Length: 181
Image 1 (cartoon, rainbow, N blue to C red):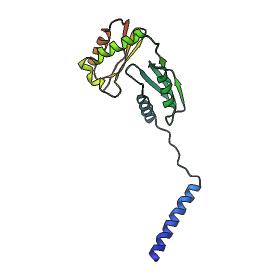
Image 2: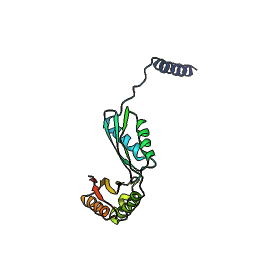
Image 3: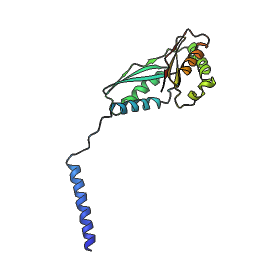
């Protein structure tokens, strides 16, 4: 009986200490995410957007807790969706949305499809196409192609540029692909 009473007393004291500590207002401080964590979380949220495709380019800059969104998108809703998800990231105080919505053009749509087939139809680029978010983005504006993203080698970068230059009805090709390490 004595052992049972001692156990109940211990539980009572422990519970009382927890309640007293809770009532003192001592709440744990929320830690601000570090710069690297904030970058990872913003990137993570952007790549998870449902309509983010190979024809869109989303990028960002972080200055303290302010995020500036840049890039080009085909759908206007993707611009607002990107801003909304980044606003909800812990540690972000404001979002400057400078994403450009590309003009609607049937000719640009044809060029997008042809450039996609030219690049991702090449056996050398098959591995890039199987990623959740393909790493070569094809941006078409007024008949001009810009390639954005990351590739494994300088040869892949050059080959993607050559394949895009072979697409009919294209005025120019700008190859901004970056060779990853």
